[in-house]
Length: 148
Image (tube, rainbow, N blue to C red; front, top):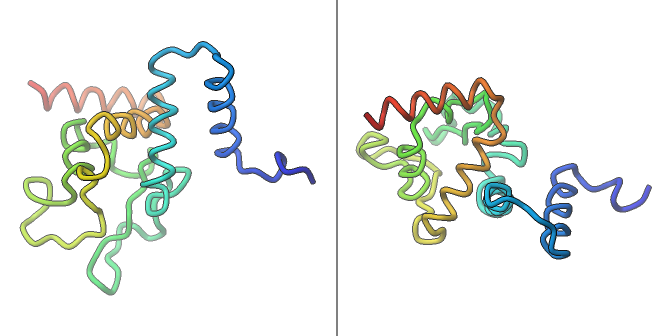
C-alpha cells in the first residue's frame, strides 16, 4: 500500500490545499480562510474535539473529576446552537462568565493569548463550513436574532 493511500482523508485535503497554494493556484478568499482555519483547528483543537469535529465519547456526562468531555463541533453537538459572538468569546476567553457559571471547571483553555482574533474567526468559519446546509441556516438565524 503506498503512502498516499494510507493517509487519512483529512491529511489528503490539507496536502491538496497546500499544493494549490504553493503552485500559485487561484483560490477565493473564503477558501483561503477555511484552509487556514482547518490547519489551526488541526493544530490546536482536534486533540480534544476530534479531527472530524466528533468530540469526545460520552460528552454529555461529567467525568469523575466533574468536568464535561469536549463536545463535538459537528452537527451532532450544540456548537451551532450559539451565536458567533458567543463561540468567539468562549474560544478566546475559555469557559468563564458570562458564558459559564462562576467557578465553572472546564478543560477548555482560553486561546486568546495564543491565537489572534483572525485565527479564531478562521477556525469558527472552518467548523461552520462542515455543518449541513440546514444547520448552517439555523445557526445564521440564531446569530441574527442575537445581534438585534
